[in-house]
Length: 211
Image (cartoon, rainbow, N blue to C red; front, side, top):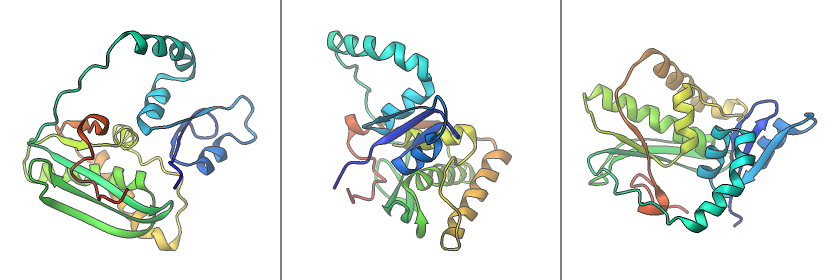
């Protein structure tokens, strides 16, 4: 099975990070001066998008040289007393589900799905919002881990930036998206949202184990 690539669109119809070529192509095809590039990992794509096209061009060569001279810096250990969230999707779009677990024990505290005709990115976004609401409702100050930089970026923007088309089969998913965006725009929270470093720590505890 081919490994998914991630695509950054710096200049196009709707700039952003996309997890499939079809969505990326829709943003750049026929667009004069479109700027886009594929990356092997979501982390690389999100970092490149956030830096901007010109910054990416200027720093790529120097970053590669520095990597040869400087050893990788350790990222430490994850915080056991935390909530971890993750999503899974069979197909793109496909049956999507998400859940949250206590990092230290793996105990599942919420689970939604599977729901028809969703995407993994949507699931990651909904999982974070559900986690934020769960922690606030329970008066908990635990930090929250997600392994999706893209979803974390969407949370910061308070908007699910999916290009998935609404259809009767995925109406329940879009209902959840609208509810999640409304929650983000009408609530405050102090929860720390942290990136789970998969390359250092292995799969996030909320992972569905279907890779």
